[in-house]
Amino acid sequence: MTNATSRTFSLFSFGSNAQCQLSHSSAEDVDVPTRVEVWLPSPVSADDVSVLSNGNHTLLLISGEVYTTGDNTYGQCLMSASAPRICTFHKIDTCFTAPTFRPSVVAAGWDFSVVIASSFTQDEIYVAGHGPRGQLGIGETTTAAATPQLIRNFPPRGRRVRQACAGMGHTLVVLDDGNVYGWGQSRKGQLGPTNTSCAACWTPTRVFFPDGFVPVKVVCGREFSAGIDGAGRIVVLHSGTDRHGVLDVPSQETVAEWTDFQCGWTTLHVLLSSGRIVSWGNNSHCQHVPETAPPLLRISCGSEHTLALARDGKIYAWGWGEHGNCGQREEECQVNVGHASPVFDVVGANADKIVYLGAGCATSWIGLFKGG
Image (cartoon, rainbow, N blue to C red):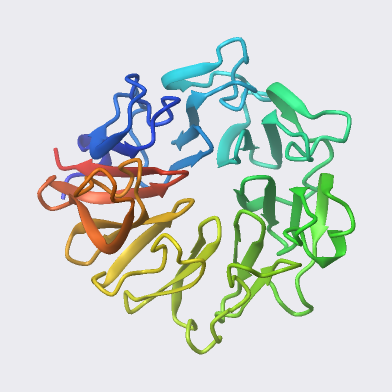
C-alpha cells in the first residue's frame, strides 16, 4: 500500500444543500455522493479528519485546519455575519490566540459552532453563532457572537479536552480527568438532574452522572444527553415525559462488546464488535437499524438517518431520506427508508481507506484515500 503522502484524499457529500452546507454552490439537494472541491493541506493525516454538520452549516477539521460552509446568518461559520452564506468550504485563517494554538476538535450546534484549539500545554475553547439560551457558554449577557469568542477560564488549569459534542441547543465536553461539563439548554435534563431548575446554563457547568459512572464517550440528542462507559453501562440524561423511549436503555450485557456509541435527534445506537447495531428510541422514520443491514464496521448518525460502512466494502444508509441524504429515492414521495440502501461502493471507488463517515441534519459525508 502506498503511503499517505502519495495518496489522494477525496471528500464526498450528499443530502440537503439549501444553504450550501454540502459545499456545492448550486444550493440544490444532492442524492448521489458528489465530490467536494476544496483545497486541503498536504499531506492529509488519515487520523485527523472530522466533518460536523448541523442546522444548515458545516465545519470540516482536517490536519489542524478548519473549513466552513453554509448558513452564516449569525456567524456560525466562524466568519463575519456580513457574509450570510458561505457557498463552498472556506478556510478559517483566524489565529485564535497565538500561532502555538491549532484547532483540535470541532462541534456544530443548530446555529452555533464550537472549536477547541490546543497547544502543547493547554486547550482553549472558542464559540460563534446564535446563543439565546446559553448555547455559546460565554455568559448571559452574550447571546450572539458573529466572530469566534473565547470561553474564559475554561477548561480548569491543567485539564485538557478529550471530547466535545453539540446537539441542537447544548454542548458537552469531556475532560481528561473524566469530568463532564456542559452549557446551553438544560430544562429537559440534558445537562443532568442538578441543572433542570433553569432553562439554560450560560457558562460551562458540571454535568453529574450517577456515582461511579465515568463515561468514555458522550453524545447529544435533541433534548437529551447520554454516556457510555468502558463496560457498556449507558446513562441517558433526560427528564419529563419520555415520549420517544430514549430511557429504554439496553442491558449492560447486551452491549458489553461495544465499539461505538452514537445518537440522532431522538434515537440511540450502539455498534457491537460483531458488526450488529442495537437501536432504541424513536423509530417513526425508520431510524432503527433495518434487518437488511449487513455486518458493519463503522457508523455515523445524523438527525434522523444513519450512514454505515459494511464489511462487504459498501456504504449503506437508512432513515429519513427526503433530501437525498440516504441516496437516490425510488420515487419522489418516498422519504422513509425501511431498508439499508447501498449508496457508495468503496471497492469500486478504488479506495485504500475510508477515513471518515459523517451524518448531519439531512446531510451525509464520505472521506477516503485513493491509492496513488
